[in-house]
Amino acid sequence: MSQHGATSTTIADPFRFAADGRHIDAEVEVAKLERLADSLADTAGVLRFSVEGSLDEERRPRLRLVVGGSLTLRCQRCLGGLQWPVDIEVLLQPVREGEEIPDEELEDDEVDALEVGSDLDVIGLVEEEVLLALPIAPRHDDCQPPRPDGGVQKESPFAGLAALRVGKKA
Ligand SMILES: [Zn+2]
Image 1 (cartoon, rainbow, N blue to C red):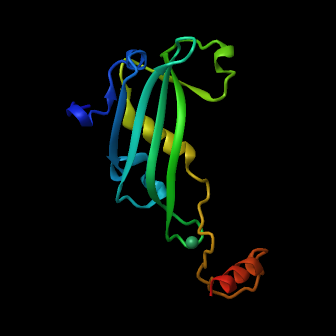
Image 2 (tube, protein in one colour):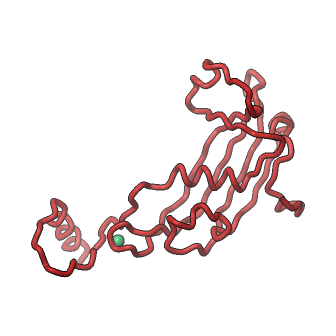
């Protein structure tokens, strides 16, 4: 990972980062998130993200990750582009690699454990959280798929609904 001052996206010591109450604000080009590429119809644009370090009332390290922006997913029906607003906020507890986390610490399901080595790759973390949040089968709300060849008339249970929606919009 290169160090570009303000655009540095590696946290060298996430535990100290949390203890010092530090904060990162940055953005990443969507095209650089290679693991997302398969889910996208278009890789233009950027995602903004921030990481805010803190200690909770029991002085446990906390990292709050916020990711925002928009991705162009591929509609599973018509395969066209589908804008999906990214609005992710997660609270993470960094734990050292191989370290056991006492169950009671994770009973609080507002916090997810995050295993880290020495460095935390923030871009990798952003990508991971976006992948977790992606809808499984994204579709346009009012998608009009092209009629399949062969013209088998099989009424979809949603056909009537789709017609209603079109009617409303017209
Ligand atoms: Zn569609």
